[in-house]
Image 1 (cartoon, helix red, strand yellow):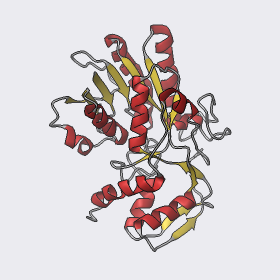
Image 2 (tube, rainbow, N blue to C red; image 1 turned 120 degrees about the vertical axis):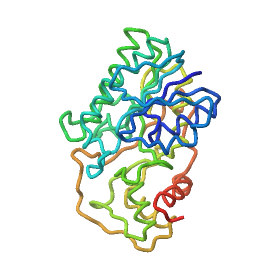
Image 3 (tube, rainbow, N blue to C red; image 1 turned 45 degrees about the vertical axis):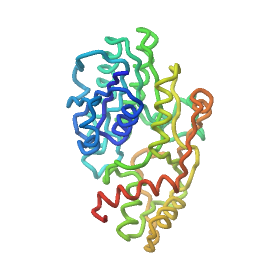
Length: 319
């Protein structure tokens, strides 16, 4: 297939481009570099089956030649309020990527009669009252909270995708992505994985907020991309959770990072400073992924962290 990937220079987008090329497909990558980095695609530029277009998906999209599939991954995704790349500091761009970007990419899929895959998120569940979260759960969200620019953009994107499927007959898919980590994450991403690994590599105590009993479920990027690729090749139109159901407290996670890095500085506890409606628990129910895609994660947290540490060492100049 010849496949358009928006957000190609991002963390997930770049891994996705790499996987599609390795499977023998041709890829047209698209990004405006607001949060993505050209470095993430540098190793692909000499591949004759890879093309790149610098473009903002909020504007009309034209790609010459036949397109067989469209994968819409363009959006700021970091919740870090202190980063210029966080979606709270790019609120309008984030909503445009979810609304106008989804509309424009669905237009490409319709024009080419191409299959379409939307990158949605576990954030659409908000601070969930159901645990673990099934795809049938409608969510517990604040539509005007500080995180809503990301949450509601993705919720709208899902609704628009299903509208195009039902009204225009577009061959659509929706993946709800849970916490993912691995090489090519931004150092200033603001989420717990890059924060902890950086602190540990610098020999600093890891900062845990509150009692550290809030939980997350971490999926290594290769596992996630495998699930997404299987979904692309499937005939499933309704949302599918892709993530790792192995739940761990933030305190346990900090202890794991310190042990794997060999950091003796320990952990410091600080008062919880939540970003609006930051969820306290997040864990996917992946029953549908197992049944429909025959997929489940295979890379353990320890193995995945060991694969991730060298990238952060390189970015911090510690190698």
